[in-house]
Image (cartoon, rainbow over the protein chains, first blue to last red):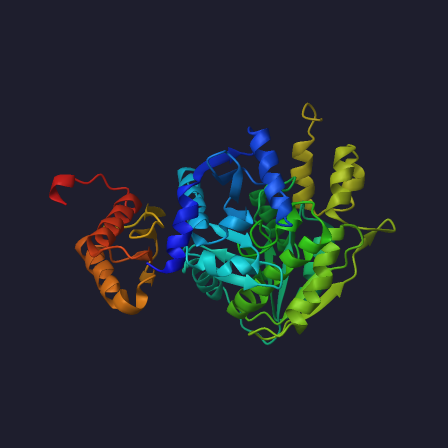
Length: 357
Length: 94
């Protein structure tokens, strides 16, 4: 045992590990919010529970949050900084996650916490100046990348597109068509999180069916999303409304993973993205894309970034949000001009008489 | 024994080990240890022997060792594998 462990134990002996259920324990959550704020952190809305360490008087000393399969929102009072308390909090989080059937976990935290988490079985996936993303297995990313590599397509110019497609529109189809026309092969990734109006399986199906109409055959490969591409783990801000500074840190992790792991597995040389006049988070993502994919000094070949101007219909850019608005107001005739047949058929099934909201 | 689902056994406490297993078509073993320099090779041998005794030929096995004694490592590997195999073993025979 090192001397540092001995000191840590003295602090640990005085603290009790407990839980704060974010949905039920309003008082506990306020204390957690205070501790996070003192560490310069915000409380993310998607955190379901916190493991907490308290002293004998019940004062909150440290916390660690779990949101789905992502461990985040770690903070501690100055007197307890060290691996001992974090290890006990992490153990509690691992147990709670395991009870919920989640054994493959990610951690999203400040780079300063990296060494502690590596000591607790986590492996770093990507690092920026502000954030580090880790996972608790040495096999996760490498297995995913090995699976992708089996879907490689021959060619010199290989394109990549990432779509949420919520739902798939003529705008998405135009982007895919343009990208495919410039490449020997194109890999299309459909965001896998079930955080959108349309669930992941439906979005994937509508992308596949919508692209089939272009008759591009083997040239285009549509991939279901994964934890490693625009997920709550790699890009939390896409799914949370948060301040700009955090948006920037989180997009860097996602883009770094794309350039250093996903693109090399498939030989992707070019990434295509629609211009973004409406969503500020997506617009910030596009701006960062150029830096992380094409310019940042990383241990992977640069990827050319192409912004494709949005397709316009009736003098206005086609977007999934415009489709959702049309759908909400029941104007299916307007929607029909924005989406391919398979998407329209699906939307019609949603608003069939008797089911109109 | 075949690993069918993700499973975990053990803790990150000092003198324990956390073992995670996942289904796969190949056998891969990763060990990290706080006593890597002194006992890394021995720990790997212990893990490999226990997997062999359990007849595990496929799966992703990750061992996070916090200075556990070898019988603890064997027990944690066995616990994770039995959970991962969704086995209901006859404990008297193990």
